[in-house]
Image (cartoon, rainbow, N blue to C red):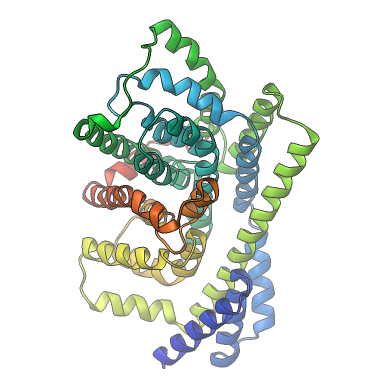
Amino acid sequence: MDLLITGVLIGALLLLLAAGVWIGLALIGVAWIGMALFTQRSVGDAMALTIWGSASSWTLTALPLFIWMGEILFRTRLSEDLFRGLAPWLQRLPGRLLHTNILGSTLFAAVSGSSAATCATVGKMTLPELQRRGYPDALSLGTLAGASTLGLLIPPSIIMIVYGVTAEVSIARLFVAGIVPGLLLAGLFMGYVIVWSLLHPQAIPPEGERPTLADKLRASRHLLPVLLLIGGVLGTIYTGIATATEAAAVGVVGALLIAAAQRALTWATLRDSLLGAVRLYCMIALILAGAAFLTLAMGYLGLPRHVAAWIGSLGLEPWQLIAALTLFFIVLGCFLDGISIVVLTMGVLLPTVQAAGLDLIWFGIFIVIVVEMAQITPPVGFNLFVLQGMTGRQVTELARHAAPMFVIMVLAVVLLTAFPELVTWLPQRMAG
């Protein structure tokens, strides 16, 4: 009977998505079908209560605020300032200015929350500059595609808020848990660039005029706005001064001040940033509402409990479960965006994860990293689409350039599985 129900629901979902129905509405439709056909519960009451409950969550308030903060900063000259502030410090490092993609993405990720926004914002400055100076396209595009996925891992992260709401875990602790893995992944990306540059020294343009320490310090003033904003958002969360929602409000005020200081705060940019944030948030909120209703329907049908029991009967060790889930999410990421992956799977997987004794904060960071992989895997890789729009290159070519970054993310999953303290150590020392 479980196989029949599962087949009907999956078939209905695929049919609705293939017909072009929005993901959120498709999830609501599938949940309605499941409850109407296979349960005795009143569908209308359940749907109304669940959708209202998911939409009125106070925790979810952080999401539109962080999205708005990223939209404001996208319309400033922050990427240009990042490049000018970082470039002088990288002249003597193997790979030189290629590291601006990685460090620029790391810094912008800490004020963005979106990998696509990070890719577009950093890329609009670095790619033309790297091409003009003669850096290899493959590495320029590959490092940007990979490093911009840090927009999902380094807090504040939109996907972490979605996971936190879905799994009912502390978003503030999730944010803090993402700091060390994010810096680790950035370090691995930089390590790859250094090794590649040492093996192919002829591909890296010669060092230009070497800046003095005074030149470097003068250039560093361009980094002050973003560093102050990062400190304001993450510092208030880590010290317990503010919740994630309150820190999001701090971030919006900081972004408005930066835009005003750069003379980029006009009525047009304010309107465009608000409209962009509202459009993106409405899309995410509809998906979350549909996912909440589908999770309720699956709970009444007993599917999560049966799946958890089946996986438990396989007798998998935790590392084997993680390996199987990594492969599962990589395949799923070829066809779905990150938010859809999280909301579609958590209702079924969380009981299994808890039964296996995995920490839900650790599992959230694991989910974010495997969702990052989905951003650079065709045919549905959002970062690849952003790069395609910026460069006119084919998605397959861009995916080939990003392949080494994909392998590095797999290595990061292995390291976090072997050393879970990389994720859990910092949240355990949070105030509050």
